[in-house]
Image (cartoon, rainbow, N blue to C red; front, side, top):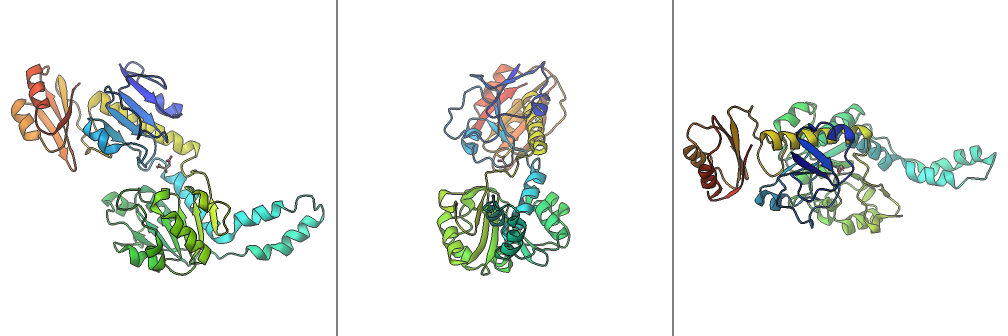
Length: 379
Ligand code: MLT
């Protein structure tokens, strides 16, 4: 039996995918085999020795100590694409919020409460304060062309925007889904300089943190409008606020506000709502449950952020799963002659070895003793 600890409310349609003959799930296990998490911060959490896998029901994994987990032999999964439509829809909304003074206009309209028959006249008279441009015909820079960025680019194209995309690591799958007319550039400064609107859709990593700062903003068009529904620390808050105050940035819409951004003209602050739709919560829960279940039961890895993907139909009596720093498939092949090995190595390595007979304890001990091996499981 595998125990799955849920650290946030996870949609029932996801948990119901865990076979009850093999899994228990709940919020109170001391020695769980797996964790499914949404936004709970696991960075300071003591990770139980029993833990083998964490599935984040969402794309970003910056609430999980991904590298420390790898070294403890814990596979971390995310659910790329599962909430992409929800985030795309909020991004398109944010582009309009950045343009049309909708929030300010709504707040002002509410001040007319109690004006009775005058309301109609006053809204007509006052509306000129809230004029804002159309997005059609303007250039949108999409920074990050993963599942979300591609959907945003295609949708904004359909609204008549010109798109310039930036992603030095764009995947073949993303390229295939992206409208062929979208230019994908690798020079961030050139992309920012071309844009009337910028929307950010990349993860927060040491390379991307603070990418929007005084220096990069200086190269943008005056009055550029920026949407950030990705992560707060992609933007240097003080630099952004100064640019809004000076008019360099015409509008900033984010669902990762800092205190200094609140109640400030030119900034629309929202709660982190990108993925808050029932559809995306269901999609993420289903994908997270499927990933963690296939790993714990079969040793297959799909959509891990700290180990490479390995998928193989089970063949043989037992499967030996080896998580390691470097590729040990040659050594394992000589320890387990005749095993059918499927392996992959990128920053770290993973292999599954299918055995015709039950695994031999001595052989497993030899694999565990190989240099750079983080964990070995026999299933
Ligand atoms: C994500 O990382 O998938 C989105 O920011 C939404 C979320 O965190 O729930």
